Each structure stands twice: as C-alpha cells, then as structure tokens.
Image (cartoon, rainbow, N blue to C red; front, top):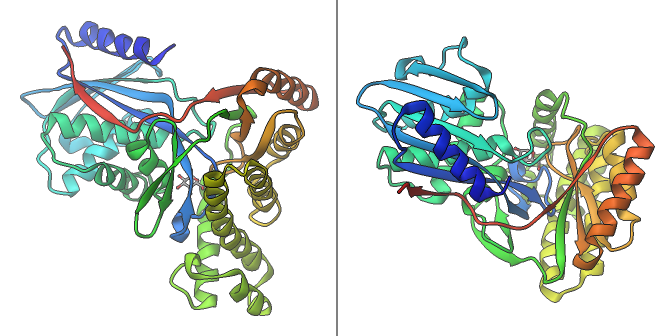
Length: 385
Ligand code: GLA
C-alpha cells in the first residue's frame, strides 16, 4: 500500500471506529543504516537514513481520562485510563504507545484522554526500527493533541526514554533520531555524543536495498544488553568515558590488558567509528569503491568480532557482496536476524534483487524479501481536513 493510501485508510478507519473525524494525523518513518552499528550507545557515529515506509497515527483529544487505541495491523483495540498506563493485562502491542504517555507524564506534561488509530507499512521485526517509528509517531500526535512544544531532537530523546524506562531495553539514540530528523535523499551523520547532525547526500544513481532474511530476531534483548555491558567494561579498562574516546592505537597498546571477548567487542566499535567517518568522506568524493569496501568490512567485523550475525545474515551478505551492480553489503541493526543493507547501482536494482532472492532462497529454503528503499523525510504531524 502506498503511503497516501495508508494515510487515507487510517483516517477512514478512525471515522468508522469513533464516529467522528480525527483532528490530526502523525507519521514517523522506519530506517536503514548505511554504516555505524552498535556505535550509538558508545557515543560514536552512525549514518542511518529514514525510509518511506512509516507508522501513521490519527487522533483527537477527549474530555475525560480515557485512551482508546485501535490498531489496524493487530486487528485489535484497547481502552484504558491515564492511571493504568503500566497495567500488564493491556495488550503487548500497545506498550510503545502507552510508554510514550507514561514518559510524557514523568516529564510533567499534562495528559488528556484521546482516541487513536494506528497502522503502518514498516516491516515488523526485520530491523527497520518499527518500534522507534511507533514511539516517534506517538510523540508527534501527542505534541499536536496536547500542545507540547517539542523540538524534533526532544521527540527522539523522549522516545529513547520509553525504551529505557518503560520497555526496559538500553538502546542507543540512532533509531529515534533518524525517524524524527531524517531528510529526503539524504543519510544523516549523527554524532551520538553531541547529537550534532550532518546531512550526507545519497549519491545520484545509488539505491538502498534492504534484503530481509525472513529470520526474526531471537535472543536480541539479552544479547543486546550483554554487548552494551561488554563495551562499557572495555571503556572502563581502557580508562576512557566511552569507546568513542578510544583509538585503534590505544587498543593495540592495551591488547593484553583486555580479556579476549572484551577486546573483540571494543575492536569492532573503535574501527566502526573510523569506518563510518571514512564512508562519509568517500561518499563526498564519489569514491564508491572505498564506500563498498568499508561496508563489506563492517559486516565481517559484526560477524567475527561483535558476534551478532547468524548463518542467514552471513549467507545474505555474502551473496549480495558478489552480485553484479553491488557497491557494498552488510547486516544492519541489532543483529541475530533481520536484514542486510546493500548499496546498489540504480540500473542493476531489478536484476540484483532477482538474483539475490533466487540464490538466498535456494541456499536456505527460506523466503526472503528485497525492499528497494528511498531515503525519506523525518516525522511530522498535520491537521486533518
Ligand atoms: C538497535 C538499537 C540502536 C542501535 C542498533 C545497533 O537498532 O535500537 O540504538 O544500537 O541496534 O547499531
């Protein structure tokens, strides 16, 4: 479904459900990540791009304390009052949405009841950050309905608070920041310490493909937390605030002071920061050969040093890296499932997609999906009618 059709469907479903028109509709996109993986919570650099696929939320305020959320994707709806946000009997799919209300209440914003309808076309569990998109879309609709004056960065950072304080995952800032601050045809170089951003044009003639392995993330929450702890341990042993402050030379000099696993994790993060900045530099010079080499090295590092790949991601990356028209390919996101991002020359996209899908499906017996994405705009909210 196109975004325009989806937006119309959400508004129409709202009218049916609540017998009145919504006052606003919010949109927040999913993302791909060109490079810079597991560097965000180490206060380093990432280079994600928002995609066109997005979450939409239509809404209007009520005069009481009741919140009703209708989910078109889950074919379900739920009603609760503002003092029940943490009620564990409420459906799990509503967690990210309730989490936003809870974080806003913690931040002393006056809440009101509201009627909402939610739907999206961001593939779930495939590593496109659909949950960050839900959080940011909910921040957008709440900022309109509750008259909150929040900058895009604030909406993103409050979304991160939902992960940390409500969901219980210590994620970094990348997904929410790109969902709120993305720009059409650009990736965003984000300094995850200062939160400074720099727009990086996607070169003309280059497509961003996301090759979904169809393996859904397993183990990811506990493994994600473990990786974060190992990185913090590495920073402590190296005597730096975060791995962002460590250099490849520092790692070499301290190699025998770090337990092997910690050294491997740190080596990935430190080199990934270097790679990310080098990719930005190479993109600005139009040096796609260097971009591709660095992206491929990124996969190797995530697989061998950070150890968050799985067989299917390795197979997908290997096939993509050796198919005509490719610039570079690597697994993206938290790991243990999801998609490989491939930068591909425009004229080769069709053939590339068919070949990669054919070879991957034959090698694994699974059914992959190749998404041709386009760097799209960050989140927004508008009045309806
Ligand atoms: C997940 C997290 C992000 C980031 C990536 C890995 O998507 O939500 O904050 O850490 O994994 O780069």
